[in-house]
Length: 482
Image 1: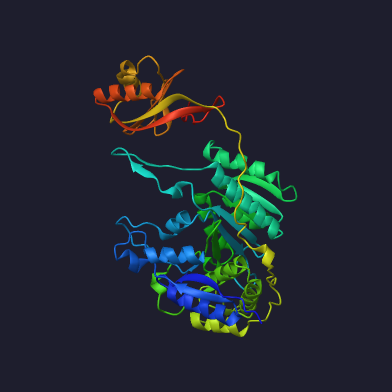
Image 2: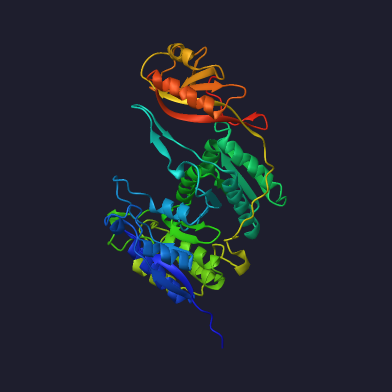
């Protein structure tokens, strides 16, 4: 008889309630018959305190690259001191571009105002403001850089449609803010429309994220799969999880072409650590997603249905316990023991879980479309200055003799609001000015010469941004009021 070798899995017990909920989850995995071999690594607060600023030792990275599957309990990132977010570091380093968060209501066993909610949030995981590129440029102004790429957008959007197809979902909705971020969010919107056309059997729509979030909170039943950018996805996935009844019930997966990480979406909750009352459901359901990912659908189905049966039976931890609905209030260990007792059972009222091996959520190696190359042409530069006081007219007068022949000053803005020409006297100005200069046939040498003249005039240049056209269309935004 041939015995299949166990699938190696890297685990980390984490901080706060992490060790408690990981122990409960591992007991359930082992009792389910899942064919796994665990490699444990140490991450988080204790590693940070040894002076490793990303919270993870080199040997831990070696384990992840070897197993390519990571089941991670929550960690605590120390405040201040330049410590880096371990989650962001792992997602970026291992190319975990897709964060998947199913948000399901369990009415009437868990209190919720939305008894039929069943929404999956597909969040881009590597780009946007989470690239973490920030600057302090003047006494009064800081800056964060929002990075949106076509390949990153295409990968996450195609993943969302493939997920919908594999899991028999009916609709994919994109959340964007391209009424304001016309170039960055506008790119995401355009790519969404292109890819949606390849999936005619799946309904699609686009919403501005503010009204989309409002509708998600009010009538989540109108959504099925939501795909969105990193920051928006972080916010709305927590909203969605909370309105199902509890953030503590939600697991998530982070999927890349080669590696995957599975975790609860809640934090390390240090205030209840060691009390034995933490709800392990988020990590348990994350482990179910992990089993589906590695092709062990039978064990995934067994655990998930036992969990649903226990929720039906009213065996609840303190965070979801409700008199008149719950039958018993249990701690972390008893929650696991009760679930193990129900392995092999199925829920009576809640919809049973059903998984198939071919519904793996990796969709590894998503191919990117070939995009026609466009003509890129330098047509100007934005020059940012640190200068206190004065008006747009004052600044224009000061720089007018320094511009040279190749460039023309076309606009001055402050905090993104046009203040010259024809600026409004009521506009409040800080010490952060932007000069927009354009010209036909301008070269980088012309820009360098301009910067030299500004420096000789004791003007403090804190940043420049070259302005390009792409097939004749401007690749930059106008200032407010322009």
